[in-house]
Length: 267
Image (spheres, rainbow, N blue to C red):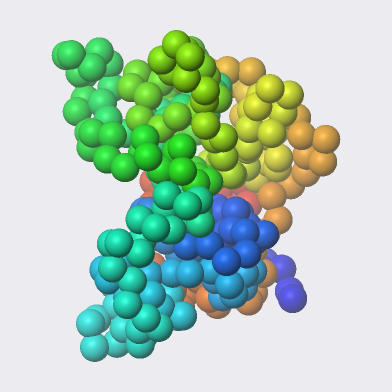
């Protein structure tokens, strides 16, 4: 494998995100959003061929469906996979989703509902969708396209849509389920919640990014993972798969200005 000499930040994040599924074995992988969806396909083709992907409708597929693919060009189906079977996988923990919240806090709680007071929000968004059930049923990773204190907030998120490692909102006497948070991929770094008492920590820094810069743009304390290093660059083979999965370069619109993955080369 040969490391690519040039790549975009979006492509770097896709490769980092794909590693979230590398050691999962046979689970359903759902990447929600442009970059997570490409990452799930890349993971299936490069890192874990046991992953189950769907066409987003009612069928399982062996080959990921490329973004913007015409109906007549879609890969063949591998089997019927209606909602009933999807929820069987979800509720039994055999699913790993990658989601894109707008707020994340120190407890790994995430918000996609609204910003501000829930009774009089400044910004109304999606509602909680399937986040509550997903967060207590299976592993979830996250990918966000901004890394600042409005995304990684001090205190708690404005609306807790997905459960994290806080006991504050659980009813008296209720035991918090086993919450599983995978990777958190941002434009600056890769994080997880694998520190003491699920403390957030930085696993790797993207090329040209310092730990101090990440800390300054995060609203809560971060730990350095013992193996903290640089986020691995895409290989030539990774980029070939990414281009096949995203032939119309929709990934270029995921980050403002489509910056280079190498900070020194960014505009």
